[in-house]
Image (cartoon, rainbow, N blue to C red):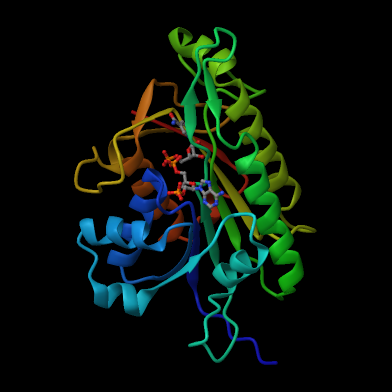
Length: 263
Ligand SMILES: NC(=O)c1ccc[n+]([C@@H]2O[C@H](COP(=O)([O-])OP(=O)(O)OC[C@H]3O[C@@H](n4cnc5c(N)ncnc54)[C@H](OP(=O)(O)O)[C@@H]3O)[C@@H](O)[C@H]2O)c1
């Protein structure tokens, strides 16, 4: 079988604020994309609300309905697989902002629980598994949205919010750490990813609306060794930063980095 490589970007978690904003910029700039969505109508409506036309959706975006536990759906997203395509295409980049939904409990020891406490690790592991089964000669890069507060190298959250990060958010942070481990372990030369960028935003504020952000150039940007320490960052600005620094450029300058983003 002839394999034709055309650049498109595969999105997971595109109904989430950061990733949706990134997808809007991606489509507006004319790139092709695929996206996994549990509820395609929800994703479509979010894109319409941001001014993306039906024509752009038809021409540039393939939405695959499915859950992150569905390996077939993941493979379809990674290969742009649809009955319309006559050849296999491969994602050049993967962007994942999948995350669980928080629920507030009356417990003093665990006031915040996550509906699926291993969702980020499971998503990443399933993407690795899907790529392993697809067997393609080229490798995509991956960008995952992790969090500040999990660094073993340097403190990257302000003193006043350390209790929140270390105690209240312990479960989602454990999940993010495992996700980062899986990403790192599966990055070249032996792994399924050509390169990996781990984005660690501080506490997220705002939503997916790209018209309401402060702008990616106004963010403070750090690395694991020299983190940008702050309290919050807008979802739309995180999405825009990923678009500008990864989607547009290929992201090679940031491969292997853990990027902290904050206001
Ligand atoms: N909250 C914070 O302050 C904070 C700080 C740092 C990092 N983060 C992390 O940053 C990431 C992005 O956050 P965000 O607020 O932009 O997005 P979000 O609202 O957490 O969105 C999560 C995304 O994951 C999808 N998802 C959840 N379970 C899924 C499943 N089983 N199968 C397929 N998709 C599934 C959701 O789809 P549905 O629409 O179908 O639910 C949604 O698209 C998350 O991982 C979050 O935990 C959060």
